[in-house]
Image 1 (cartoon, helix red, strand yellow):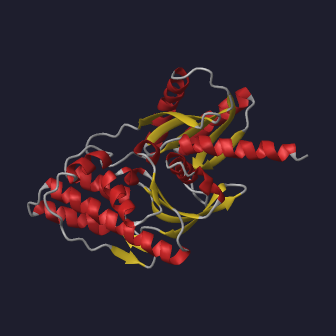
Image 2: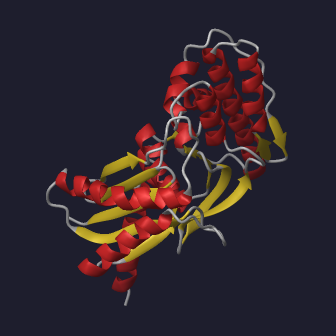
Amino acid sequence: MPDYLGIDTSNYTTSSAVYRSEENRVIQSNKLLPVKEGELGLRQSDAVFHHTQQLPEMIEKLFESESGINLSAVSVSVRPRNIEGSYMPCFTSGEAVARSISAVNRLPLYKTSHQVGHMLSALYSAEKLELINERFIAFHVSGGTTDCLLCEPDEEEVIKVTEIGTSLDLKAGQAVDRVGVMLGLKFPCGAELEKLASKATKRIKIKPVLKGNNCCLSGIENQCRRLLETGETPENIAGYCIDFITETISMMTAKALENCGELPLIYAGGVMSDKIISEEIISRYKNAYFAKPEYSCDNASGTAIYGYIKHKKQESSKCLY
């Protein structure tokens, strides 16, 4: 059975996955990086160290979980985005292991970006992988990005990604984590903030800020701090934060559709695993598709699928000669 190993070592998850192509099935093993209570993240040097410690364990668990894995290729995310200058040291941890596995087993090695991995993982989860052959609009919303993207078929990169909107200041995931820590939640705060928001007893008026196709999100943190200082409940503050992000993403979606036409909409990234956000967006846009939470947060599933697609194309081209 042709199987494909994918590795992703981003902030803040160590991830490995195998795509079993004949069954169109993914198995994965992920682990969050340890962040001390009250802190909002890790230095890159610490992230590299923890990935180096955790990745062998994740791969061991992956191969212990299922028998008969027969690898045809290895793929790995080596940068945040497919743009010049895109680099983070944490991705070197995954690349080193992927190169070693590839060399020892004499397997093809395919390199992609963390962002393309997110797109493919979301498409797989939404059962929309055929969209790699079409144009679509995607949102990548996480701790490091709040990006609206035009995605198009590409022979080399599988998906060509062009930014058409972004946050000009704070990213949505940063807002979630800063507000969450402010309310005493443990980093990363997304799941707990969503639970808190679901208990809100009132809706606080919001004023999302768009500048052209871009958004500004720094007002979330400032307003939530003011609300906390004036005695507002944590539940209502959490609800305000989630509502602000929901309305911002919705407004960016409307702008993208206005500029690019009625294209399919794909939403990925950890923030987009929030059910409050996804249910509201889906109610407004008929062609909106969200990944399941386990495929929306950082994972290596899309990276493994990238290897499958690249290897399949390579083998097909060989048959032409």
